[in-house]
Image 1: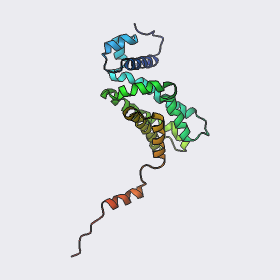
Image 2: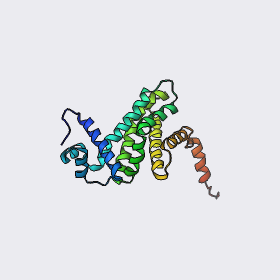
Image 3: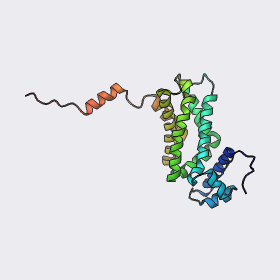
Image 4: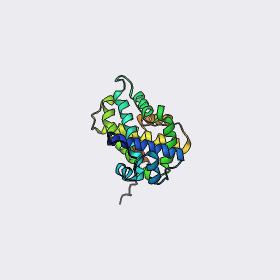
Length: 211
């Protein structure tokens, strides 16, 4: 019933993850017993538990694959391409293009499952950390710099916001991703000096009368 031992464990985990997600999409729910998932995708329950410590973790390898596709697209892009175009291509590689149908069908199910939603958020954070060294050279930043981490955080957050908008209001995920990246790039937060002035205006200092 299990797959051949010649298949690497990570490849087998990814394939099991992909097949589990295909099953969730076909059934329109993630609320299936492990016994049914394992039987349908062709592995034993014991192997399922060896691959995934909890049922919700069965989406984890697919999210890792998405992150690798995203990062690889950035690393392999034309050195002269502008960062905006690079991250757009990366988004298409990981979540749109040939996998757009899966993205549109899977994420509403993941977001409706509290445990899988938690796995997704953890993977967004993990992806942010691996994205920084991939993105930094294109922006002229050191890989471990605050600027590189901030840029990676912006792109990772834009991805999460795009998927949330797709699920909650039916928005085009790529459009929202690009709009959010642009908002971060344009300075969605005020600079430190501007923020200090805003705070002062909102909370003026009241002087006590002399004497």
